[in-house]
Image 1 (spheres, helix red, strand yellow):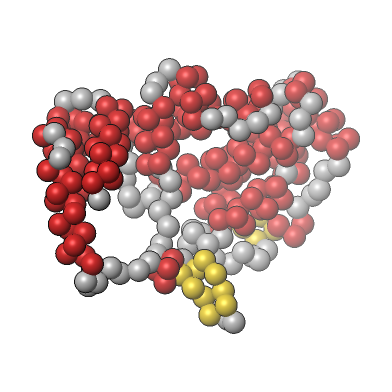
Image 2 (tube, rainbow, N blue to C red):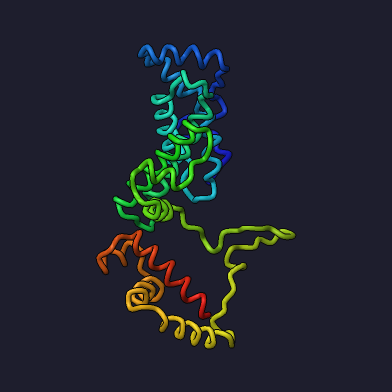
Length: 257
């Protein structure tokens, strides 16, 4: 992706205007009065903000034009929802909105599909997180977000984990003398080590000490590769209960390994 591209979506980025604080305040007063031309000028005067944000995503393989358009949607949403009485800089409010819109676009276009209900829960959690940050001027805990949503914190964690962008094993994490080291380089392969069969014996012995329900859950989770939500649906309990039983079972196994 050409990050230094001059023209994006027909906009010559080298000629974008830069608004000073007085101009921004004056334009926003007119926007609040319904002046559409002032709104257009305010949008155009903040397009450099969109450009600075999309550079954070220049390694995703997405087209610059697409990210710019999505970032502009975030900018417009920020303008429409900005409250000048909060004594917060527009850029401070707008940047998270632009980033959020781009991340939403990347998630929805991800080849790994996440269920609609799970995405909805995650987006609500992100909205609550932003609301609590604006209210308390600090990062909220998962417990605080869950209480605001009125749902178990395990469900919130599960939803947020599900929409995280996957990381390529070949993504560079460190450069040494011009050579890039990827995540793959840091992952060891223990399949052929002599200790493997001893570990298997220890695991089998530890599994024998679990009750049938715990064995069933661990088997579904780690041998069949099912998610906690899928396990919950199969055995007829909540995802939060699956999470709790899984942790208890693993804790018991650690005592015997």
